[in-house]
Image (cartoon, rainbow, N blue to C red; front, top):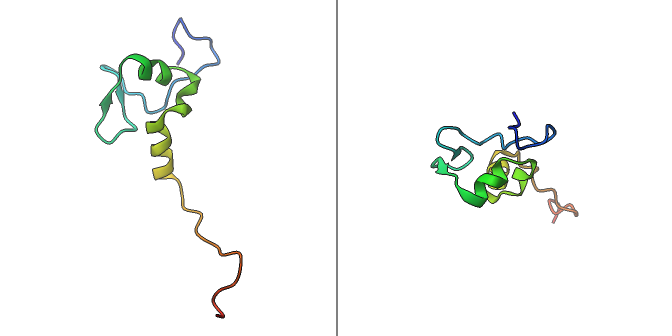
Length: 73
């Protein structure tokens, strides 16, 4: 939910913990301060390396499909 300093269309990172602010995307619940907190509290949270790493860990593997059929070699 946006606070009074954010426009209504901005959202915060879904992994932003509260009291005290912690990054729940990190394995260790990393405390968030300064520039990282400003990033977490805007819609630009998807630029965060920790957020992106979490999304990659949770994503499904697409698998490897060779361009050429190598099973007959």
